Amino acid sequence: MLAAFIDQAFADHATAPATVAARLPEGFALLAAAPDQAESFARLTEHVVLGHLDDTAQLENWIARLDPLAAGNAGLGLALARARLAGALAAGRRDPGAALPSAEQVRAHGNALLALTRRGAWTEIRALLDEARGLIEDAAGQRAFAAITNNLAGDLRFYHATHRADAAYAALMIDAARLAHEHWHAVGGWLEQERADYQLALCLASTGAGQEALGYARSCWQRCRDHGAEDDECCYALEALGHAQHAAGLQQDLAETRALMAEYQSRLDEGSRRYTAPLLAALDALLAT
Image 1: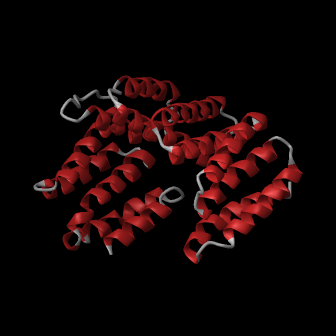
Image 2: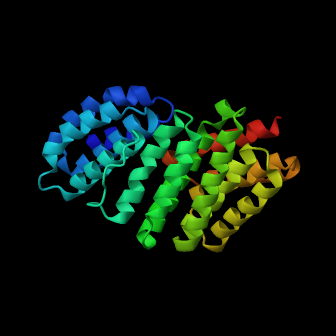
């Protein structure tokens, strides 16, 4: 039951983080029957209350509640140590994180960065990005940095429509996507590289940079074709291609991409189709403009 609770919370949190935070005590009550899910629950809690709500006090309360469960659970102990450092970074403290491996210190910057976006603290975010990049010691650290910058870009893109008048917002979104692209292409496999192409293409398209977005979107789609990607992965690649085509004014190409996405979607099971249906609807909306 707790696994289902966590899955639903992640599905809901982007549009209703406060509601998900209010439900967290229900999830905590389920931990007694599912102690193996404690680390996942801790990651959810950190992401929602710090990354989305920028509430360091609530994060500290949850760390205190979860801490007694960390005895004998190394994964939970590591997650809580990382959450403590994330909370400190978001609060402007530079608590020593030397007890954590360097890659985990990099990861701790992720939700702190998201918390700072809620304040529009663009200068502080860029300083924290530089700090995280300086902690990279090996491929694990580089992968962690690629992940947190990709998440930052994706989060900014998700809320971009309400910040279109803020040039600093868009600039940070594109820069974060470029950082993720650079590092995933250095240490990632084809799937991470394809998803980095996807992220950068959509971020660029959302700002109207259609021609540049097209290059990354075509690369994303080509990687899927070259590596025999699953049908749902192909739908996401076609999403990026369609948005780039619209931004570039290529409506006829967009119509063809929409038809191809519908073909791939028709082969998906009901569960996967539920996630890809909004992608198709979004292309339909673009075609109508």
